[in-house]
Image 1 (cartoon, each protein chain N blue to C red):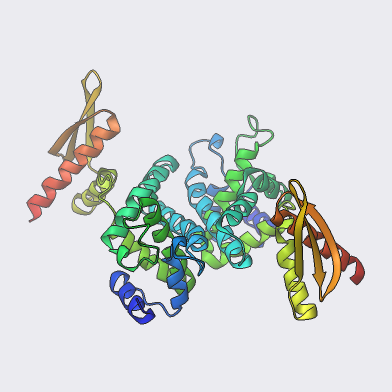
Image 2 (image 1 turned 180 degrees about the vertical axis):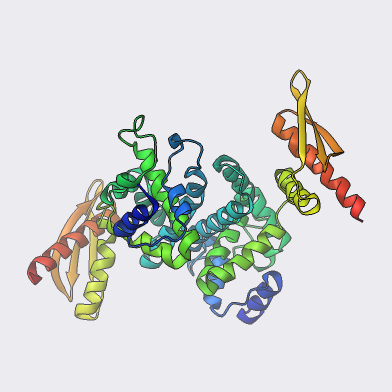
Length: 218
Length: 218
């Protein structure tokens, strides 16, 4: 693929325009291609940028999350499986520069590396603002990951907008090792669920309440 | 300590001025202080910022380092011992908010956490540019860490400037498990050293050559 075509293809996939074609090429070149430089150093940089942007995003979005919850959520975004998933969604396979005889199908580890190294290249080319654009694309194309995690947040926001007050979560011990949570919005019972911890029961109940509201609003 | 005094003290130590006193306080408050909020969430954010800034700094500074060398070097900067060392150098102990009866001497783990959480707070207060200032302060106050790592780079730059050519490293097997390296600048012998690997002997020899040059130029 010639340079102009590569830049065009990349722009079509990501919305990002590269002037430094060499940098773009380095970020998508696997070492099996030979001695012309490969993505390892950019991956070192990009990995840390992705982790930073993910942390910042989660920190701002989830004011009531503990450090442990934030870490767990971060790992759901930056783990190998999700990055390989994003790689596939963006069809980055089409532009990878590698010895495709020995690498007919790319392993997830390479897909992960390339997504990370692209973060590095975009940062060097476009700065923080540019790389935030690519991060948004990554989020949009990520696997659907534990949306219960957000259910409580979403329900709170929704209840504040709709009723000007927070939802009420009433949680009680349900059986030996379980908790039951009931959710009330504006004083009215909406949904319930059972979970192994108080928190789990609340998240599940929030999710059920959201489902009900979405159904009502259709 | 009242808020104004805290902000002043922090500025004296770091050169950084906080308007959001609450944020600054959160970043230096250990959970032993009680329920008023502690640094854990900021530490989650700051840890990733520190890692990003360190990676960026090393990536730009060491164009000939492999990913492995960059990672090794990064861990020398962001590891617990060094961050605790920086904490002590900046006398941050004076401003920590904690139950000082149960925490008369702070363990390194808390010192590490606080340095990281301060990165988080400064980023939120001052953005990337502000937090880079604090990163420079961290580098300046870090332990002297394997400056041999940089000796070869420095010698190369110096030789290029002074003689318009690279230094010559002549390395040979010295004994059973050792290597000896001699350094020549502009064709003239400068220094030598012995090491367990070829690379180690070169780094040490480069360091010795640098010492000699610095002496000559005094």
